[in-house]
Structure formats: C-alpha cells, structure tokens
Amino acid sequence: MKKFIHRTVTEQVLRRLKQMPAVALLGPRQCGKSTLAKRLIAELDGAVYLDLEKTSDLNKLRDPEAFFALNRDKLVCLDEIQRIPELFAPLRAIIDDRHRNGQLLILGSASRDLIRQSSESLAGRISYLELTPFQLKEVGEENLRLLWLQGGYPRSYLAGREDSFEWRQDFIRTFLERDIPQLGFNIPARSMERLWRMCAHSHGQLLNASKIGAALGVSHHTVRSYMDILAETFLLRLLPPYEANIKKRLIKSPKIYLRDSGLLHALLDIPSQNDLLGHPVYGASWEGFVIESVIAATPAWHHFFYRTATGVELDLVIEKGSRTIGIECKANTAPNPAKGFRQALRDLNITEAYLVAPVETSYPVEQGIRVVPVLELLARIQRTSA
View 1 (tube, helix red, strand yellow):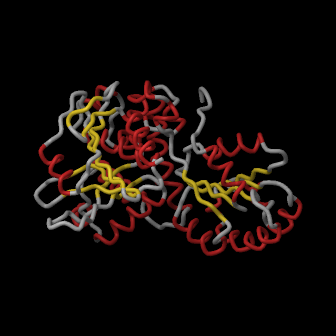
View 2 (cartoon, one colour):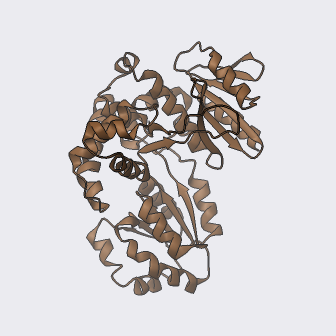
C-alpha cells in the first residue's frame, strides 16, 4: 500500500472503548479493520491483538479464562471473531468479572451470527460500529472519480488501474470459494456468482426475486436467502421503500445496490473510466455511489427511496426526527430537476432537497432545491442535524 489514510471512525472507536466494556467493529473483509485496530493498539500501552485466522493465535484461546486472566489489565483485540462464535458465552463472565470499560475490541466480517450471538451474550456490554471501505471524505473530493471507479477497498483504491481490477476479481473469487463455506453456508459457488452478477445488472432497480429465481432455476425464497448472505457480509444493500401515509399507490419492493462501486464495476467488466462512461450502468453506478456515501455519513438517520405506481420518485429520502431531506442523484454536470422529482417533494412536503452531481461548486436551482457535490451535501446534512 502506498500510504495510510486516516479513518473517520477512529475517534468513535476510542470514545466507545472509554464508554463500554466491549466494542465490535464490523465491516466487509479487506476494508481495513485489522489495519485500523493495529494502529490503535500500537498507541495503547499493553494491548494484545489476536488474529483468529492464525492457528497459533487461535490456540491461545483454548482456555479463554486463563488467557484473559493473564491479560487482565489489557485491551484484547480479537480479529475475525465470527470464526469462533462459541467464545461469546465465556466472554460475558470474563467482562463482568473485570468491572471496567475498554476490555475488548472485536473485529468481524459477517453480521448475522456475530450480532445474534453477541447480542444474546453481551447485551448491555457491547457497542457496535461499522467500518466501510474508504469514503470520499477520507480520500478527498479531488479523488472522486478514482474512488467511484475502483471502489473503496484499500488494496483496490491504492493500486494502479490494472492491479486494482485484478484485485477485485480475486476478491470476488475468494469470497465465493472460501468465505461463503467458512461462514457455514452450503451454497455452490457458481450459483452465488450468478446471483451476484445478476444483482450487478439490476443495480439501482427494484428487486424482482421471482424473475431472478426463474433465471437461476431456484425459488424466490432461495433468492432472498442468498441476497441476505450478501447483505449480511456488507456486499449488497436492499434499500427499503418509503411508506408515506398519503393517498397514492406506492412501490413496496426494495431496490438493489451493490455497496462498493468498484466491485460493481468488476462484476460488470468495467475496468476504466472510458468504459464506465459508455456503459448503461453509468447513471445507476453514480446513484449507488452517492447513496452509500450518504448512508455511511448518517448512521443515525433513516434511509428510504420513494416511488409511486405512476413513476413519481426520489432516489433517497432521509429522515431524522422532524427533518426530512430529498436527494436525487445525477451523473451529468448540468442536472435539472425532473417533473417527477418536484411532484415527489410535494407529495412528502419536503422543503429541503438536493441534486447530487459530479460538480465542483453548488448552486440553487429554485426554492428548496440545490445542486451540490457529494461532500457539500454531507456537510449540509450534518449542519441541519446538529
């Protein structure tokens, strides 16, 4: 890697460790959890790091009580905790015995069993944070198109174009052939790969599980279970529809998004900016990139899309308390609000709305609607939520 990029979640991890006995940092494989944890540990006196994918480190936990007794006054970091979910039960007694905060930092690459097990065993003792791949705020707006093309996984973003594309293809193969079986799922790699690629082709579209199932030769229930695996390993997002109390027929199916634009482009065989510009997914790719940026920056908000049966829609609606903001994503540098966009704002009584485009400066379009670059959008949302 060329350099270390400061992660914005760092301060939150340190603050939560002061407030809670245990902190779980969750996120996809290769997003930088281990790198961040090791840097934090290097700055803390006497912290211990165990990589549970290493047999030598795994053996140290054959007797958890003895290990934690030996390291009683230290912060212990357990990386890839989903490999030994049975450890959560003894951790509860160990944590309660110490009666202090900042005992344990857990890193995990899968959320379903991890959250279920830890919620049952460590309720009231653990705080959760998510680490995403690099976000635009971390790499700078001058690198927007590079981040959009190559995605935010550190080894992909920091590599040259060809090396980055090869790394993402290797990531996809490794996830299918190694990670899925390690998580305990008995799913043929070829079936999951076909589903993943179909999701890439459906990026930004409404989920039609029956149609996808027919193409794969499986039931719609199987499609949803496969999608749940992709979602719970932080690779896929199913954005829910907005359920407004208005007299209109609303779409009730979620929309499909691959969470990392670089993986989307690898699955669709888009290696360069020129290839992306000429590809039909260009607009939807930008839409997903913006939506992930907003969701990552606003974890305390609620996130939806809005669409009526007549086609009136908003790409993203975010809510917190009494605030509702409408967001439309436009990949061109001279965007104009569509008629359906204005109607959606009227339907939902939204008075603050943004067209998010790859522009350098913001400008008002009309009352309550402004064209903005991504980082200015995030800053404006944070100001309104302060």
